[in-house]
Image (tube, rainbow, N blue to C red; front, side):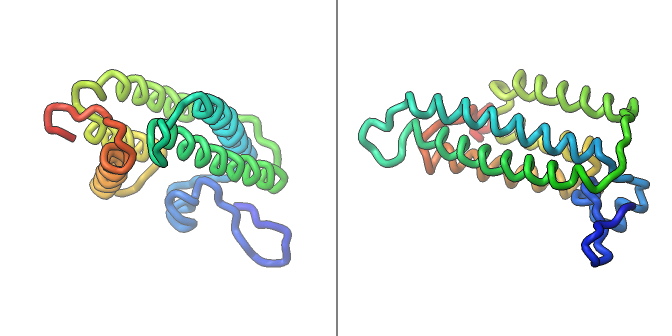
Length: 184
């Protein structure tokens, strides 16, 4: 693991952010420029998507109400812009801290494939199972593929986040997400 040249003995562990420094070392996770580059690219992609969402939000009308159909895209677009900009800045900052390494393992491609398949399956099952169940499963699969150590806790967190998002949209904003056969 490399250290930053700031005078402090501070470990940089981008992938270890998910599991902590000790677990990253135990799992044999090494940091490299690929991780920082991926962070920067994801951030830039989020910025582009946020601009698209915000441009579309301008075209929507709240019908004179404070909260309406245009509110959700403004909130989502603004958060995407903020998180995307922060990820891009972090990735760019971290790019200089590691030596160049141009290797992609088969496991990286497998993870990417599983994540893409999970997104497609989510899009296909959300009308039938409802948003909360589908989003919980998507969250659990994504977190597991990215190395979440505790599967039951990951599932619980996914359910909590999906439920909060469902309630925010359904009750708070008035936009109904697919409810599925269970009503949520």
